[in-house]
Length: 215
Image (cartoon, rainbow, N blue to C red; front, side, top):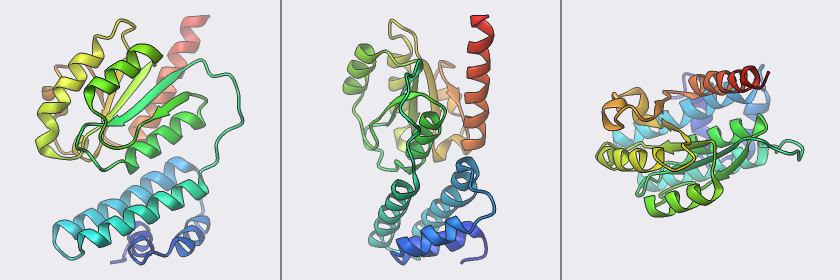
């Protein structure tokens, strides 16, 4: 490491060099967030996760890199101008899940496209997720799962949230989405998205369908 752009960004994160990371990101030919997130941030954090799994970095190194990545995203992230939003989405990690950066990227993509969002980050118990969704009535609920032994818990979240009275769309993503057939854990009551490119396509399709149905 580093051989790729994502690997180079990972090195900045592991070194705790937020300023270097920001400069490196601003040097990239494309400044579209979907590509920065998919090709740089996601690749960098996957590289860091792989290093941790191989015991080449410590838990402290991984925590430092995560903190720097979060800080860099917050520094570069610009909220769109305030405007009346007609679509709502809430995003959360299952209880016990601490890997929240991918979910934060998804929340940003929704906000960038004019959605009103609630972002809960890591480890939200189902009872609180259900109560909030029942009161706020989001059109979409996004769930993130990254650890294998949380998969049985994913089924409980999907089954309860999918039958809320206002029938929200349930989206599931996270590191495991591209590694396992998550449909078997969700009884087909959700849409599984493997990466941010699929998420962007889903967003466009959802918006196009709403426009068509309103004509």
